[in-house]
Image (cartoon, rainbow, N blue to C red):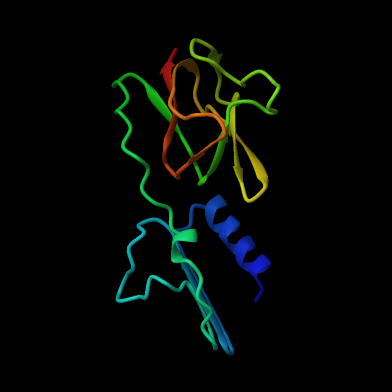
Length: 155
């Protein structure tokens, strides 16, 4: 199994919200975990792939660190959260206008931003109807899985 295949597995894990993946073949075994950043059951945190000849790889590359604590949303507002680790972009291109600003009305299918992960641009939708009340992430900066990006007041 090469690095390209491992990256494809990681993408599938992200897209399907899987926290653990394990594959064992003749002389190859790989176990991938996402989420806590803490080794489980006595695992060595410096390795995440263990083929017949163990190859060290940074465990942190696959582990999503907990999102920084953001001020909690008011009771009547919904937060749009990042579904992945990546780079947050408010507009489709550096010279283009942002997808949304504070005060803009959005619908469930309205694209509010892009998150770039592994050279793939992923459009993030509002997933609810309402008005943008806050933009919580900074453009062209990294975001974590589960990090609040926007607040929306339902209509």
